[in-house]
Image 1 (cartoon, helix red, strand yellow):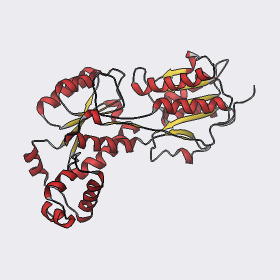
Image 2 (tube, one colour):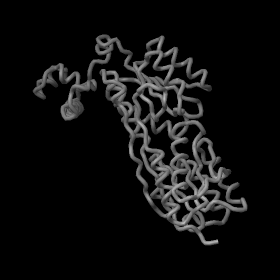
Image 3 (tube, rainbow, N blue to C red):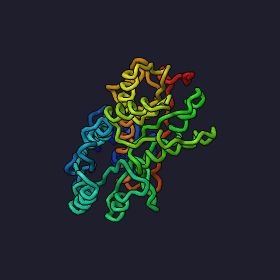
Image 4 (cartoon, rainbow, N blue to C red):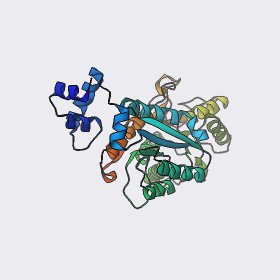
Length: 339
């Protein structure tokens, strides 16, 4: 099927169909969806080589990540989401693996100079991210997964980490818990700072001082979750509840609770953050895990769509999304034990 055939089938001009398929902002959402569904149903595929010659674009989206992240469950889920969109648009994902911030900055300079990618996805931002500043200076289009403050408007998609953690902490406080451990991400990363702020705000609302020993900043792994929880549970005044920042960390905490001879949901409670991994279902765990929930795969899908909008000419200042986070209460969060 040619573009002309698809346009005639829909009763639209070739220009409108082309712009709808390429994400141009002047095409309304209803028309864009109608064209996209018809293209999928009828098997229309644009000629990638012709499109690249016509637009001067490479047809690739760049992602620079560390060696430790690329093999992790969070990044694999995220890339799966991005890939499900770009593949349907005959685009490629160019992944560059680096070992330090200096290497990452150099990678962006190479990508901008070589024009191997049309845009990049920037992830794991800090509160004042140097990488975002560099990309602005290089004129390389990008969408940020998260938020940062560099004094200029940038396109981003984030979740309400502050609100999610505040709600989860408040729920545990309502259950009588006052010794609540926050197993957070790396200090300085925006999502971790937002989560700690939500945690502190919930405690402050109840006039409960924040014990610095109850807040830990580490990467999200099962082993670190186990070791931290094991140490905390062996302390003289242990936490009665944990807020692990990921399901991977929560698995380690769960293991430490069982090893200590305690019962999850009775002696110790957990509300974890769930990025919705297909192989780790919080509802099927025993006991089932209470979570704050937001799909990282869906975030990858949406960011790929935002990349298309930027390449179609939409201003970065108009692309700001913060998704609410669902609090799902299950068996792992119960009343504080009486001691």
